[in-house]
Length: 216
Image 1: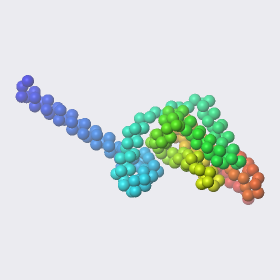
Image 2: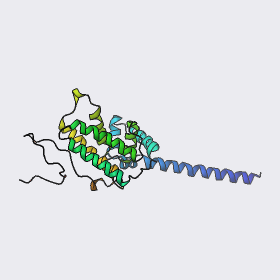
Image 3: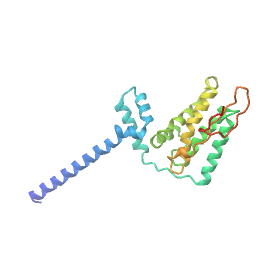
């Protein structure tokens, strides 16, 4: 092999290495900094808080989540599946009036099942399931954590009814995201909030919507 050919090969290899280095830097840049903030939203702030303000450590954690779960493709639900899930959620909300903790337990179970049906890790792998959801549904995954904490809370330290109602309302946002056609148009589906008995002990009318207000 002549000297000229060897030099040409060296030049080509060096050029390929340089191009690869640029691609790696760009890929890292798309995951880090502002890219991570845009992708994770409130989850970015929670990660920073978990690391006591260490932004670099938080971004390493989030980068690892993207590497592990970013390639997941959500499986669309069949219309019949969606209807069954929606009916179960409505029933859980109505149950909240008389059995708030049981309603939250059902919501926790239902979120695990819907996420599994969409292609996320199975519900018996809660931590992995939540990690994957945080990559693809970062704006609403916190509601799932809240209802799951209620389920795992001992009877002696159970949250009050309003805390459970608030957790169920927040979890509804993730549920709507998961059952929606696109996985992102949850506002189109969101309707009912769980109700509680009024001060007189009477059962309020169920099926009210967020935009409704009481008439004086």
